[in-house]
Image 1 (cartoon, one colour):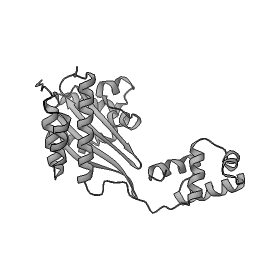
Image 2 (image 1 turned 135 degrees about the horizontal axis):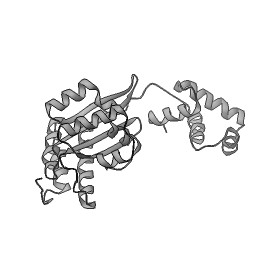
Image 3 (image 1 turned 90 degrees about the horizontal axis):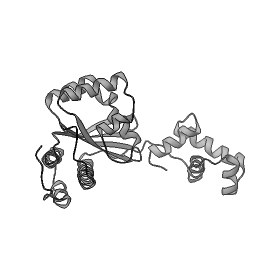
Image 4 (image 1 turned 90 degrees about the vertical axis):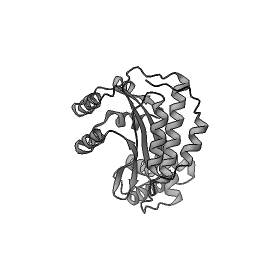
Length: 243
């Protein structure tokens, strides 16, 4: 493993990545920087809410051609336990930490074995969450025992976040789409209290309206959002960035 001394600070990397004008330039800056820590591949993938549903978009990736072909042809993204873990985590984690936290399905095990076959034994992943938006910045390493002392972990986290932020700016249309849904301020207010676990009666007491009126607003909002249940309506409000 080629180790750097971190003389290339986060500030230096931030300056270089902010100067990038293409996604390939961001990819190259990430590739150069993470190599100092023993990582040989990286990728940034985003999942964006659109009128057609959730769409997956690759912002950048530095993968061997063979792995890119294998992954795309076999739909590894849909079976990756790394992505599954990233969806439920807020903080960075390693591949081995994710693997130890779950029992792999047959499809997930296939992805893991395929990664091992390419010489990757561990990796570092940063989840990024936002309204109607989810993304990951992942790095792969041939080393199983990564150097993840607190300062190194924080360094990699900042590098990944800076790279994601610049890539998302350069990738036009990466922001969640407004899906043409409009609900009233009162409907949104009621749904927020539903999300807090309040009953119609409790919401009515808080807003000084009747429980029947609360139910009317919640049902109207649910219909506008195309949701079958109250829980689904709340989820869609969050997904669409209305919450």
